[in-house]
Image (cartoon, rainbow, N blue to C red):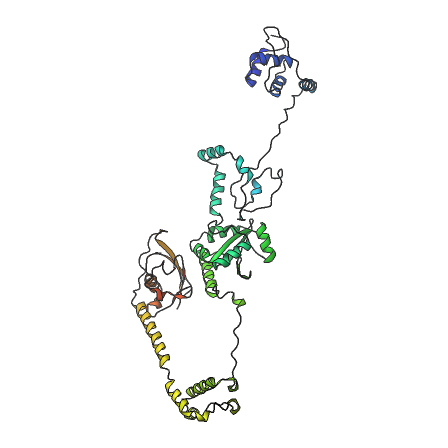
Length: 476
């Protein structure tokens, strides 16, 4: 062994590189005993042996490559190690978990390397192609991280993500134009929630309002629900047509005209929000359309006898005579009709018997019959109402398959939410109301849902009456 190669240097080289002793000896001899330089050469040469022949047979050393020689000379002159061999790699953005308070670009350390895609927010629910980097996910590493337990910070982020998750079960992945077309075909309204990621109040909507069990059914049944970020494509397009002053922004659009008929910028109580939605649906029935666009009914104008036909003149005379029956003089006098309005074929003096006969036969018997029928139905309904005992009963345990929640707005303005079985008759709800409202035990009160009096549906079940997760108004 050459005196240049020290035994300790040889052992150190072998310990670091795990190379064979002959190869280690050749590199140390070539580097003139410099261990660091020999290791750098070994790594830069990918561990290839410098001696192509056998050292025992006295073979000649293969000459190193010119680039390696230049690297050694340069290193020897500057007394520093040789530079590492250049490697070319491509960095890929790792898919970030859902973050409710920051855009996904925060999790991209190399976002500036790749061409920037159009900005998308977590609240922009339009259909999109799967991201290319999903193919490079390290599922083994993710699995081991899950099995070994994530860090406390990651666990906290996941909990927040679940807590403030957007209402994907309500959101329909449609642009605004397609949403309006779908709403028209289904006779529904369009509800838009415009979110701003930096506003915490927007996240509160996802946590407290859209996830509420009273809010979900009324939206699913009556609205096409959209949720956009204010800086998304659809959000920017919406704000170009409808000015938005504050966030969060919730609005209802008429899909037929595009008119924004109602708007909210502050929603904190689910019960109040359900009440406002119920009032909106009651006042703006779909067939009636927007009240602002409803044509005004023309005011009735008085017609002169000259514009009347013979039958109309006779009917007017009979009506005038019936109104004046309380006064004998007014009853005997003909109605004040100008003589010029009567034609030669309709002289009132020639038909006194016919007028008297019709006056006698035109009694309000048919009106009294209908009034008696209405009174009878009212008495029958009141009798059924008073026959129902006042009893709150026992609230069943929560079971989404067999129970539902009903909200009552009482006459004093308070609200009560209670669970009922889906197969309970409506009279069970009436019994509960009579127990909670003192005046309800003395006189019949109205219990309305969507302009329908529930006293007319006493024998129907809660499901048949459409009262699943309903908001009922109790009148005084």
